Image 1 (cartoon, rainbow, N blue to C red):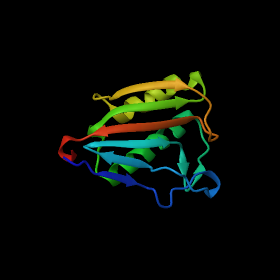
Image 2 (cartoon, rainbow, N blue to C red; image 1 turned 60 degrees about the horizontal axis):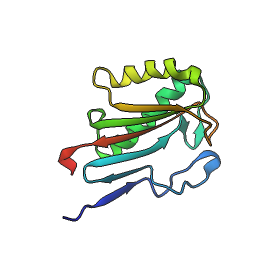
Image 3 (tube, rainbow, N blue to C red; image 1 turned 135 degrees about the vertical axis):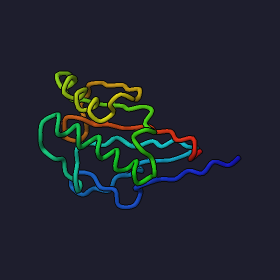
Image 4 (cartoon, one colour; image 1 turned 180 degrees about the vertical axis):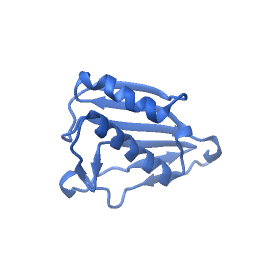
Length: 132
């Protein structure tokens, strides 16, 4: 069986300052979708704000990419979160709970510096057996 791989957002993906990003926004293969880390950016620029607003936007950017690829919130199996300050943990968890509700995915959360000047980065892994 040959598995096809589909790459999303390899043409025209931009980062801060309009720089071309050398990676796909997401890759689908065998029912899996791997969404690259998303920050709270719109039109290639970080949106200023507190951790709650930045968390919502970073997750929404992931959800928008998932939607483009045909995946839904119900397909999310794992989330990776990078916060730039451990004090953001509770606020991020509040946003996470609002979005994922009673069926949360598995998750890892760590604290680290980010290449982009923001408070949070989120990546999501999805699985949908009907797309395998």
